Length: 259
Image 1 (cartoon, rainbow, N blue to C red):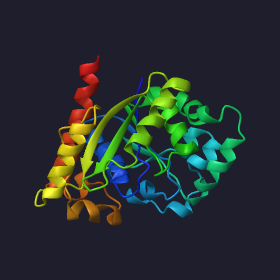
Image 2 (spheres, rainbow, N blue to C red; image 1 turned 90 degrees about the horizontal axis):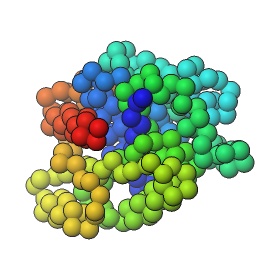
Image 3 (cartoon, rainbow, N blue to C red; image 1 turned 30 degrees about the vertical axis):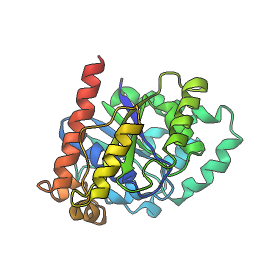
Image 4 (cartoon, rainbow, N blue to C red; image 1 turned 135 degrees about the horizontal axis):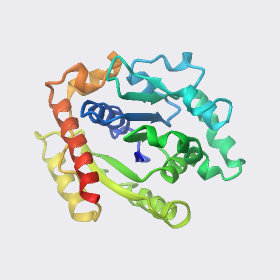
């Protein structure tokens, strides 16, 4: 059975989508079969892999509404790696937050939809929206773990306690096996004292696992989505590509150590 990881942080602009795309691509490069699920109505994960999001008719929204089967929504990203697939999203997904509230067993809909295909993948990565709403709750209820990107900025810890509280509520009421995969620092600038201080502050105040890999602030990482490519294909020699390769190795090693 696959390992399902939700990439979540209710703050926007922390590198959540960048991490979802590039971690997935680097896991695929390591020979793992990966399904990336875009759970954000902004559809940045979808466009970041070269798809015209608003031209798509079969997305995660139609799956959640039971209009299509989940297999009908899966797109193989052959331009990247043979073993990387995507379930896309677009602006239609914005309506799902309201529609799910009236659905029966609303917190378990995504888990139910993903269940038939779990065995087909080594990893399923869920890119959550920057809010702790029903879509994020569905993603966490379906997942084995949560990976939390944190930007190296002054307010890095703001809101993190709320995210951890939400995870604990889901553990208690919906998914007792859910755990925090770890925290990964993003947009690290070694030239500034602030980035170094943020890393030390979080380490001092957080009991959760913190990944050794730190994602640097990197121009090539910022450019890659506009070309519809993950960083390990856009510029595999960049510091960003090297960082996500190391993060993928850590994620794989964490799984092996848990067995």
